[in-house]
Amino acid sequence: MIALPRFYAIADRTFGDPVALAKGLFAGGAQLAQIRDKTATAQALLREVEEALAIAPLGAQVIVNDRSDVARIAGAAGVHLGQHDLAPALARTSLSTGQIVGRSTHNLAQALEADGEAVDYIAVGPIFQTTTKRNPDPVVGLDSLREICSSVRKPVVAIGGITLETARDVLACGATSVAVIGDVLKHDNIAARTRIWINHLEH
Image 1 (cartoon, rainbow, N blue to C red):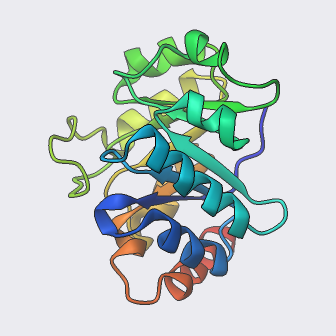
Image 2: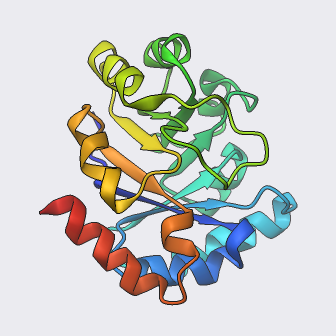
């Protein structure tokens, strides 16, 4: 079982340069940041991941969205796969021993399937309405999140529309981590907002 921080940060190209975003997240104390750039070529994404790794504090992890090959070449902590990406077992063939795999799920059936796959953690969402995806899946809600957390063995990362006001309710459902995008990245001072989130989740 891998150890995930309570605060799962995502440096999403939608809000600016992922490397600059990661710098702010790490400066605020984030111990894990996923680099998410859906528009980047493989070469551009590799460069972003390598630059993020270069500025990551000692012990901090960088996860690559979608591309297991980029994660392997860059030496990132691992890869995060969506429902339409490579199957986890296939992604594993291009990863090094010890690199982790996360899997996005949007309902109980998908979460149960992921629980039996070669993944280290299961992302579940959107928990609430979200504006960071163009065509989001149906809202999961707290009751379904609670059911999923009690039905799977692997750590659950909750994502989608989570705010400071709702974060503890999300954790109370059994989620290991809370993934936050808009509520942090839309702020002028990402580092300061990150610190607020980490303090809120850990106390």
